[in-house]
Amino acid sequence: MASNPDFVQYIVDQCGKAGEITARKMFGDYGIYCNGKIFGLICDNGLYIKPTETGGKMLRSKELRPPYPEAKPHFYIEEVDDHEYLSTLVKATCAELPEPKPKHKKK
Image (tube, rainbow, N blue to C red):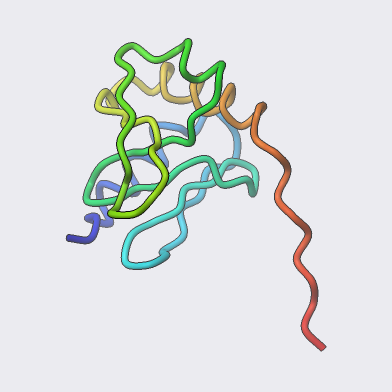
């Protein structure tokens, strides 16, 4: 089941204080980015954030689960209505994630 575009936009808005938040459709669901860096996925109307040490310490409830079959486990974020909490979590998570690899231009 794919995510509802209204839910995706809600998550983007909720994380907005962390930086420039965007969502891109991929494999039927969405990747979610902060300032161009992917930090999680939105799958089946659920928010999944890449696990980091700082993020794990900030979680109100720590639950690791794969966003889709065969995927690596991510932090499942059930509490998406607190925009301050989400923005702080996203900012801390992104600080620990590596910078995206530069894209090679096709000739």
